[in-house]
Image (cartoon, rainbow, N blue to C red; front, side):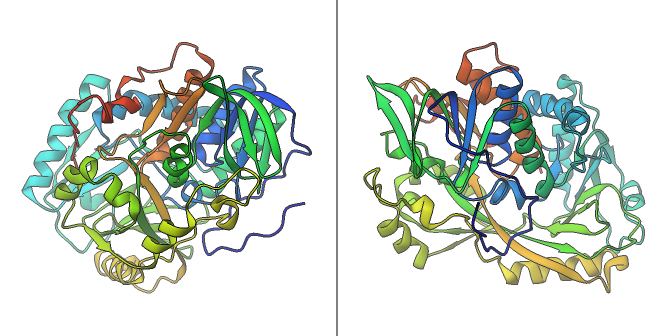
Length: 449
């Protein structure tokens, strides 16, 4: 029986734990977000003996706190083949799981506030055609048609009709339950303290409840991944960025399409309300890793300097002191912090709410039902790592999806699983290899939106 974990984030659908730890499995997965459960689901359906270990709750961190967008629109071109595969998986997910996870292809519109934004959107639409993606460039009147009563005049917009949304609080838990139905194991409130290594390769995982043997391990720990693999000498340049989100009470706004503006973005939820947020401003705490990975993140810092708020305070000292690796027989930081539950940026959400109500009159008197924060695991080039590790055979890392991992998650999990068992991957994994940060490759950041 699990004890209740109190947090301020959205309530995720509960998942029942498997009854007892196995002695060994073929693949052990660390992290119960959308990447980890997708990898476990893919493996279990292939008859691979798999166990997933989550220190808190399935979907309890960013996989249950994100905006719920499933998008091609404006995505880094290196990710598009994987995102196309993800849409294929999402299309059949409800039928395979027997659960409606809220996936709806209602399209996504990004409005352009400036001529520079409009030109970037045009560039992306042209580039996306090589992948067979239909992307429309809208005039100002066409953008307004998607949002009745829109009280602003964008210069135009980008529209991808095939794009969609889904419910974060439903998706990962539904997949975790399906893992168990297919013969896999799911263990919540069971932190992995580190990897068991024998003869220079992965031989299992050491959990707070005991060791489980495994010939392969997938680290899909979101914002915790870099810290976990650092115990074993692996340098994974990853930092955390605070995302702040709110949701409204149900409302008849007449807007089905997911829409992004310069100061707010909205997605209609299954409950009739809207998830509302903005990427116009983000908060990043200065922590020891900020200095450790400073050189890799310098290009991103220069590009996002106007939108990124840096702050220095208690998190620096907390991580400096409390995040030290301890012997396997001692409690780890993962057991002390079961769910990463940051306080949202209330000042930002106040501005987002004001922009929403001013921009779309239908929301003028809407009730705000909840506000929450989540930590995005981000990489220097804003592209994930889905990669084997040369220095530690048997280890695959799937992390750093940089704020757009929910939509691509099912395919990201599939790719990580394929790398773990050595079968032909669903897409070329080269763009996601970890050594790109060590072999002199330039850090390329694609900024389309």
